[in-house]
Length: 254
Figure (cartoon, rainbow, N blue to C red):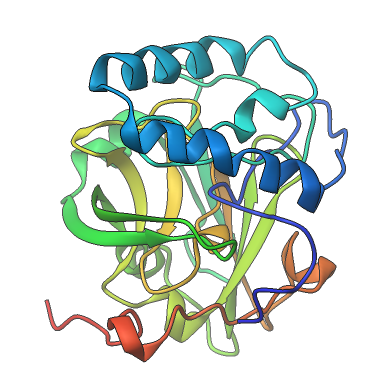
């Protein structure tokens, strides 16, 4: 992955707009300007960090520019916005549609996803822009389980993901999508996924840079070929392996 490629994507497959308004990628100068705040978060007391985190959670709904989402919070995550706003979904309104080259298309409610066997992964979250959050727990349904239940047809070779922000997209090859470390995640850091982290459900592709882990997941479509996602269309790698040096591209055995 070339760290000098276009301006910052990230931790979202992130931000996507409810009104399908596409914002501009965050400029490098603005991004670099937040690094000082990141350093401040390292040295300040946990109370101040929690206060900043609470501020971010409330400000994210009030700032249509998405600039508040750039600030690093106490948990080490940074947020980037590519759209002006994202609708909120809850257990009543959330739906995940699985369709495309499958024999049994289906739409899942959040309760139905929660009722399926859950898997837990604890991995480092690695952003292509350089920041990393070590040992982050994610829990959810293996994507391969949903694909198996749908009955993938012969000739299928990829999976395309869409999000209920109306803007963000991602893709994986079918082989990548079937890995044991690829989840439809419902929990992160031992809590239900918050809206800011892509809840109620997001894609989590553990062995790849975090822009592959699309937030606010609403659609899983089986296709013949990989179609570049939001950031790949802007110059990022379609295959975003973090690299063997930290073990991310070794598939787990269980």
